[in-house]
Length: 259
Image 1 (cartoon, rainbow, N blue to C red):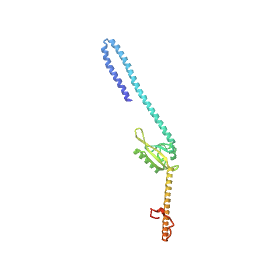
Image 2: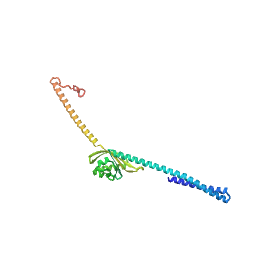
Image 3: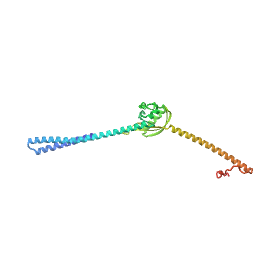
Image 4: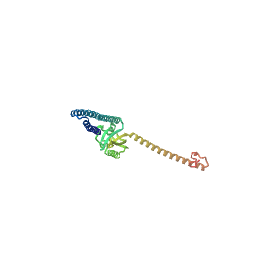
């Protein structure tokens, strides 16, 4: 806007300078009578006032229109940011995932109700505090180390975190990334943590059952092989005694040559 104001002043100065220079010369050439020259000079002055007033009106009106347009854009952008903030606040409030934001010192800027639930404190009470106020010191130190790494690298990362909460030990799949302002400067971190305790427990139970089944299979196969070896010995003894082998082991043909 300062450039527009300078442009208005320059246009006005150029017009006034050209008018004064040319009009005075024209008056000297057109009028010889002193009284007529006075009257013409007065008329020239009033004409100059009218023209410059009109010029200033046009230039100032243009500048005012630009200011009003810029103001309307700023209002629209502010309303857009406000709507976006309201939408984000509504999403955070309605989410079952823990959603939070921290400043560069690791202090909470925002905590939703789900996060506050796992911290065991009201959401408002956690604002301005760090992880040391919500979790055991060792666990809090790990969380704060991750935050520092995210701010330093500028990269979003996802980790599995085990935390002691009022609901007992819980396992979270936590995604954390840098918070940046419009200029790109990092001023904190954001986080979204999903409670996956039941999923992890289910996977552990499934793995234990699979291991147990594998042990059972190995034991069953071992017993079956022992039975086959015993039947082979009995068949061999029957052949030595000139009798018909009592067990048919045709299914082993091609495996070890037994028939």
